Image 1 (cartoon, rainbow, N blue to C red):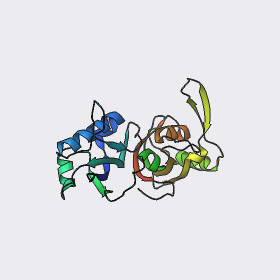
Image 2 (image 1 turned 90 degrees about the vertical axis):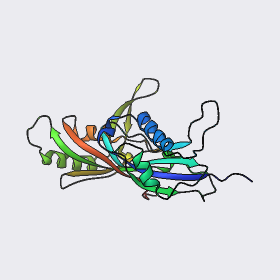
Image 3 (image 1 turned 45 degrees about the horizontal axis):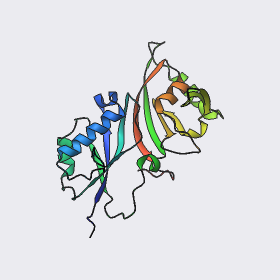
Image 4 (image 1 turned 90 degrees about the horizontal axis):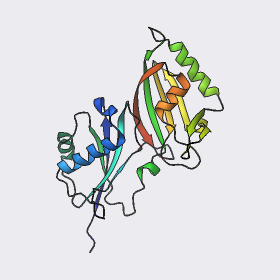
Length: 228
């Protein structure tokens, strides 16, 4: 009889100093935390065995998050107070928001970069390098201008090193500026029809390089706009 594998998905915060670390460092931090919890983790095959994990799409530097997702598997069920155990063994800026058990799902779980298709962000303007006081009228104007445009053209370098202009208009699902907070939903994950768009690149393109924002990823959606 085949041994049962227990499958879990965590939803984690990434706050404070952690917004300065790379995606690779974030992955290493979480894997080390899982190991410190003394879990019987399912390992990959091959010479260098590592825990079988999956992570949501990389978060750009200087952005915090309420919703980073992580898959992992174990040979035994996790303990009842796993939240306390996990937070005790990790950075103080990582909080376990949710732990979902997918152990009874017989089919293979879809990779997170395929399951996740959209991400919601909030950005609070904190500085305009050209002005001593923030002028929200400029932000309101650029927001309305962006929403009325048919194109969001951004130049990118291809893998071959060539410059290519890509239209990201379909990559913006929604955009609102209300009570001093920008809220927007951008394409993320893998999709052949709609290109993914980073939050920092979007803000720089629409509002210019002079504006600085405190940015946070709030939640993920699947292809049907269901919150994950």
